[in-house]
Image (cartoon, rainbow, N blue to C red; front, top):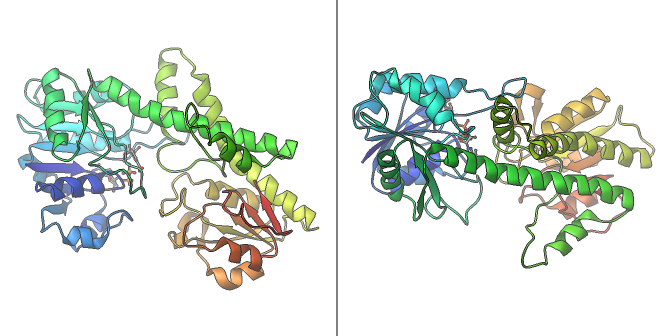
Length: 415
Ligand SMILES: NC(=O)c1ccc[n+]([C@@H]2O[C@H](COP(=O)([O-])OP(=O)(O)OC[C@H]3O[C@@H](n4cnc5c(N)ncnc54)[C@H](O)[C@@H]3O)[C@@H](O)[C@H]2O)c1
């Protein structure tokens, strides 16, 4: 098959590679000319896809900026970003733009699948009308379905092939076409009655995580008051083999999904005069966690008879999770801003993030920086860092990830 993928990011590129590895011809369209150029020169911009994988595809995957390339594809999968606006409402700009692009080149018989995470109704109410501006009718002249992406960047135990794939088309025939498409690369495809349950299932998955993370984040604050080690509590509860799923506290929630997706559902709910309280409360607790971490840094400095103002704070890890360089919505960004507002001098070390342009910061070498800092704060625990050495070298260390539990030191504080 010839398959088009619109948007070659964390979702689109691994999917494009999976289809190409299965022997299909894949053309990826991206609005970012540097990504297109890089990919065609064999350079990957996604940690999970090494350059060697691109080289092994025998040119079955090509990147392009030319929308006309989509005309000859049997199926086109849309994987563009779905962020929030400044007022935390769904921002469907990328989706609308890519739909307009597609509408201009849509061919009879083509299958279009949306993978971007969004609120229930988007495929039918937003994407379908734009595609039908082509003069063709969905379900009759072309096929249309939604299939949520479940990729977890950095994860190796579950892949595109081994993670079950949900599909829901606007007609049973659309669902069947989508099922056939994903059966090329997924061991299990689960057909649903339409796009809406598929859209909402993805949101449920992410809201489930957001709510549970909020629960343990709030518990971490309570444990602080009670003088109980929250990590010991979580670990103890996790020994129960049924009825409990472990979530760890931390400095807040980051990435393109968890801090964003719940608000897509809250927006849709408000349209129906419904106010989903779990979602809003979890968002509120998780968004307050970076501020709580800054309070903990201030307290730790205070114990050492220092003020935040004028102190040198070194953050260890700024991406939103270990092993990736993605800083979108990362709690570290908020922590830097809040510390600067209090007059701290902030630097960071992150092997995956060479610079944070919007904050005017570049990653510093660990050696030297640790001794120079007044406090080192472990915000994201990348596996490459030796945390025993960090605790030994820094005058004071605060650990928001529970990676120093085996270490005893008077200069160490944990969430
Ligand atoms: N990152 C994840 O872990 C993850 C997991 C599951 C679902 N999702 C969802 O998948 C979608 C994509 O997320 P992502 O992390 O891959 O984003 P990303 O920013 O990494 O990639 C999106 C790509 O789309 C390109 N793009 C934007 N507008 C375009 C257009 N009009 N035409 C062509 N290309 C365009 C961008 O240049 C970018 O390369 C989002 O809806 C997200 O919520 C992400």
